[in-house]
Length: 404
Image 1: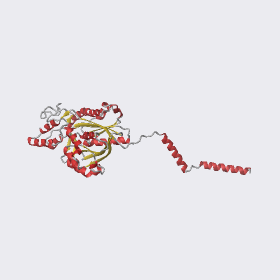
Image 2 (image 1 turned 180 degrees about the vertical axis):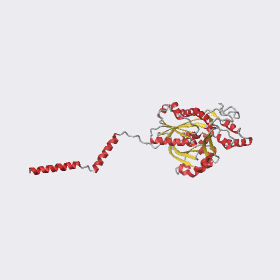
Image 3 (image 1 turned 90 degrees about the vertical axis):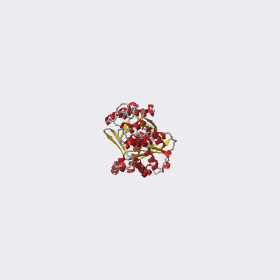
Image 4 (image 1 turned 120 degrees about the horizontal axis):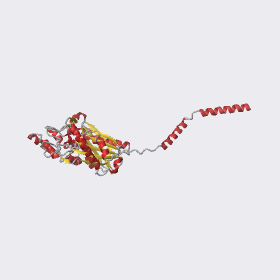
């Protein structure tokens, strides 16, 4: 009995050891792993809820002090023979522009030896690109700061996390972004992005980028600055089409604050239309004597056709009657007329854009933001469409809503 009991005890011990050495059943392993994951997640700090929305809270605009429209018309006319001068004056009178502003003071006599009061633009010897860029480097930060000051950020300036600057009328480094950090009380750690040489539609791309930033991190506060000194690129010519183009341009700045917090304009969606086969109709080239804008008289018809064939895409399948507000870049009266015809809009629909054109002319990327500034005053709950046009031939569009 003793031997039998001893063998039984040994057998039981071996069996117990063998069972202990076996891996646990799979469902036990999964349950233990799940419990460990839950404990780990409980210890981790929770991330803030992600927001799908971005809002333009405020927009401020600024122009230089020198009003130059009538001066430029007389200067341009002085370069033409008498018979062509009458054609120019008639066509310029139909442009729908009453005032434009420039960063440099005009001379006393538009038909005199100098175009500007400082004597930089001398008839027969206009400055080269280097001199114009020196003027940009001096004047652009001043106008940009004027725009930022219009937002009245106060202590909020130190909370700005991102700075986006759009311009196509000048280059320098260190650039406007660093100038604004220093002069406007922004943090040295602000993330800076320059969007350069995209032309008039750059502001829409700036808003698109701001929306991406805010949606990826709802704590972000984005400052978008659109600064353009178009009048720096005035040139002497006897080409009627170019002279009429020069008489569209003005200088201006628009600054917007974009966050994840209402109120303001909610940025819903963006869509780009490119008429690649018409790309030569609008170009922006750097030449020895400034930046040369090629703006063909065929541009309005090309924009009309591009919008007509892509209407469902950029309106999301909605009829134009569903859009309450239109913030259209006023590139010129004929361009606004083309948009109105293509989308079958009422004359009142583009009134804000025509008013911006009348008071300021075409300020490249800043211009559509002047129109959007008016939309901030609209009642909440309205659906809007914004669009700008530029080289490519490109139309950048967006849908937005007013929010209380």
